[in-house]
Amino acid sequence: MTDRDKNDIVGGVGRLWLLFKRHGRRIFSDLNLGFTFEQAMVLFILNAEEGLTIGRIAEQTDRDRTTTSRMINGLEAKNLVVRVPGRDDNRQKRIYLTRLAKEVLERLNHLKVDFDKSLLEGIDPADIIKATEVLYKMADNIEKE
Image (cartoon, rainbow, N blue to C red; front, side, top):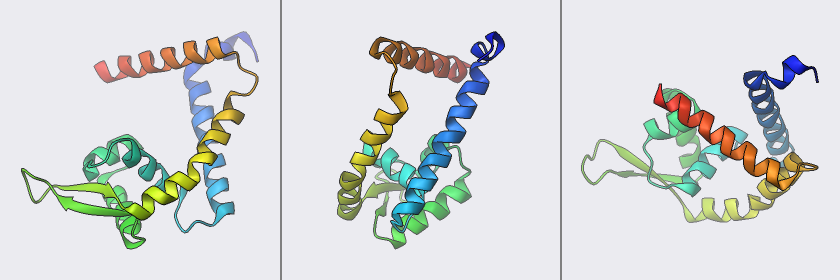
């Protein structure tokens, strides 16, 4: 790594994100679970915070609403999510995990744990904490704009 590369945070984060997606797609393809890595990301997002709207899921996955809606349709057809009318506005549907999705996510949790281990292998725990703090601070800076 050159000195210039050490200062190219955008390049580093971009490379990491590309490799992360590529690795995730390969794992999900090999497992042949019947849904994509991108759909799994939606399930993990809903596992952390159920009842999100399609718009909010689109924001978190960096997809447009139409693509996100198609992903939700696919997950709904597989009985992994349900759409529930909002309390204040019946037109605005909230997305919830089904019992089946929660069981699937529980079985997949080891993949996330294994991936975290391989991703962080050989990195000092203090560096991981500092890097996490810096990444969240950078995200906060971008959100302020």
